[in-house]
Length: 290
Ligand code: ADP
Image 1 (spheres, protein in one colour):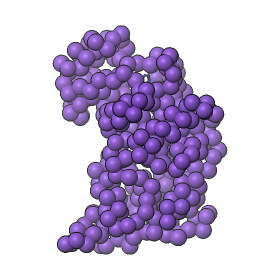
Image 2 (image 1 turned 90 degrees about the vertical axis):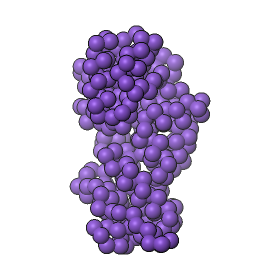
Image 3 (image 1 turned 60 degrees about the horizontal axis):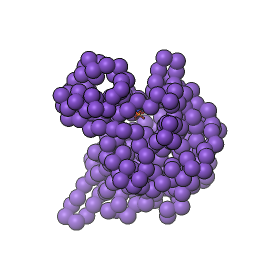
């Protein structure tokens, strides 16, 4: 079988593992740099140009779309749909997962608990919303953030104003979110592949840090999820429409809340912590679509 992994970097851990896993299962695997791919229409005929030439299509595709190329990724996935190439990430699910507010809105509408959150388009609006949200600290987030980079804690109105001003230079809107103090710098990442959770880990933030991102020095250990959390994770994945995803839960006084859904989850931290061959599970799932 020919598998195409749409990824920017053949040397990235997750991409390398998917290649290894595919080859170990006897498939031909090619990494296609989607930053070189242009969806093309000639009359009613769809193609994907790669470096200007028609791309030889794989039999099945595994899109790994980075946060900075979402629009291009969405367009390529839609082209794969038009071309009848099976894959494991719907364009609509990717768009929903990439926008933290849209994702939380969809989850809340499906009666899934999420942290109290306000979407703000100006510093003035953020200050007013913060007064209502109180007490400080309050979490300020960029809508599209990864690795915890666009996530910060404001301890007072002055800091909130500075953060809001700074973030609003980068994007046209920001999120204010209640700070879940009782999480104690820990969260849970569950990895969903198809209709099951293949691995789960608890991430604990580095000392002095509240963000439990591996890129921010967090440590990870394998965990068994409670049946309630398992149900919550699967319901979240189905609600957003992701087939392969990382679902992040944060423990709170009112039970586990869903923090976000990652449609191209990194495999390094979670394979390291759990020793589960997640790349193999993803490849097998992709092949099952044929
Ligand atoms: P990113 O998508 O950049 O990883 P997240 O929204 O997942 O951003 O936040 C990064 C980390 O910051 C989370 O994994 C969690 O540890 C911490 N965090 C985020 N929001 C909150 C919150 N409302 N309360 C407490 N901790 C939070």
